[in-house]
Length: 73
Image 1 (cartoon, rainbow, N blue to C red):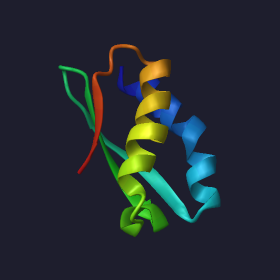
Image 2: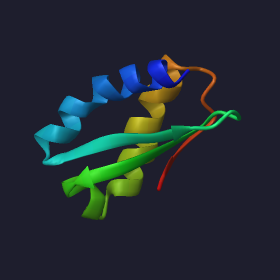
Image 3: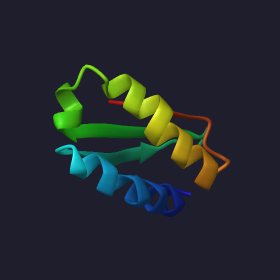
Image 4: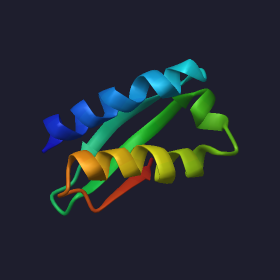
């Protein structure tokens, strides 16, 4: 499942990088929780939570249905 999540993140990455940010996969737990770290401009952006939930989580869940949640660490 980790490879599928990484592939989904790779699809989102260009959009984040266009705004000066990035996302790094930290871990995928056995119960379907994906842990990521927002980097660059995304790490300090006031809209980071919305980006995480409405952008990253939405795409990851659509690509990998086993994922229950995406959280920032």
